[in-house]
Image (cartoon, rainbow, N blue to C red; front, side, top):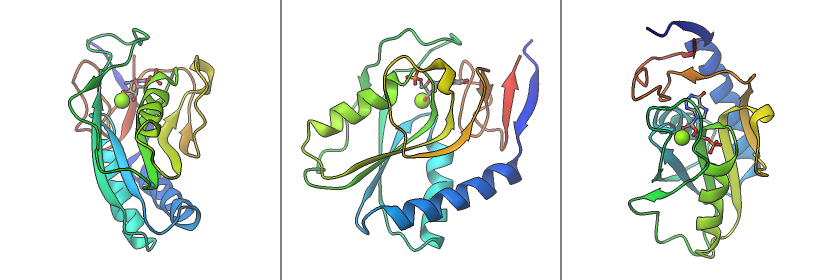
Length: 173
Ligand code: IMP
Ligand code: MG
């Protein structure tokens, strides 16, 4: 059995999401599309969308699904698109939303894919960043929390499909 140790409480996450939304609303042009990476970013994207509303932004919301770790705790180093990516994005400003940037492969794969569709500006936002684990360059414009090289779950993030429902983020031992 794996144990869970709370790393970020519900209240800590909520406060940080509110601040991030303020920074995003102050930085991005008025017209933009949030593109959340499924499944992990679904809770963060939902909370961020409502915080953006309170900050005065009116984003459109899209998702795309990339391949995942499956049952493993480490990346296989290969990213694939599962299903469709948002289509009518030519000339549009995009804010990519992910749960965690680890090796950097997922978010840079998503960014490259969208850039090929001739989008306007591109920004990226990750709730969690593990800078020690980076293998490919992936500039993140808005980071919720920088964390150590630990494996976490909760708040949309899974370990082998478990724990996504938790309202907080825990370290999985
Ligand atoms: P990257 O492509 O290596 O940057 O990995 C990013 C993705 O891997 C995240 O969006 C998560 O879905 C997953 N991931 C990375 N670290 C963790 C973790 O600690 N727990 C659960 N999933 C993780
Ligand atoms: Mg993910």
